[in-house]
Length: 225
Image (cartoon, rainbow, N blue to C red):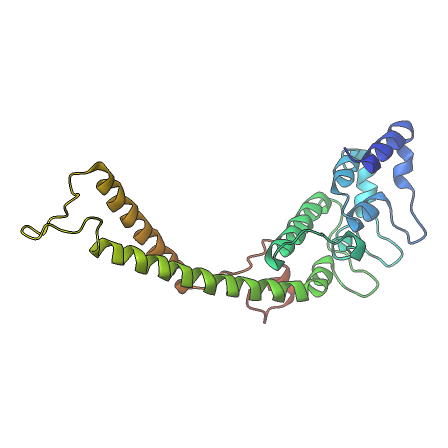
């Protein structure tokens, strides 16, 4: 348990009403927890069902709901891990869905002062990351296709150049009766099958970003995701 969570837990155990305090920007504890990505605190607070109802439906001075705050991540809280754009976007989408699920019973798609819904704000704030993720997936698809073709080529060639070579009189592989020869044949068949299957999957269509929230499909109908 983090030190921050311990402090929050101690305060709430002593004075639960502290949940309703807001800062000068009108943000309550859930706004701040999402803003700074303290998801453990968010999970802890929403367990206080009676008080959490008001907190989940609250907006700050700019009209931003809890769900709007998913798009407002502080730069200082950006992940320092070396992650691909696709994984970073996936984490943001999962958080968006998590908060949306918690809030869905308490408000119906409010607009902030810029007349943006949470989905519209999320799409706008993460558009660059979305494009980077698509480009990363395309490059990954190309690289994996090349690798799969190479593996398939090697496996196919291995089938015609078996270890030990064939018997000159019968054409049957010399090591045909050896147990390890059977293992070699099975491994070669499996590798060839898997490689060709991978090539078929990659060539049938590029990997896509299927965001279950429908953020881009709902707000950017011209964007092919």
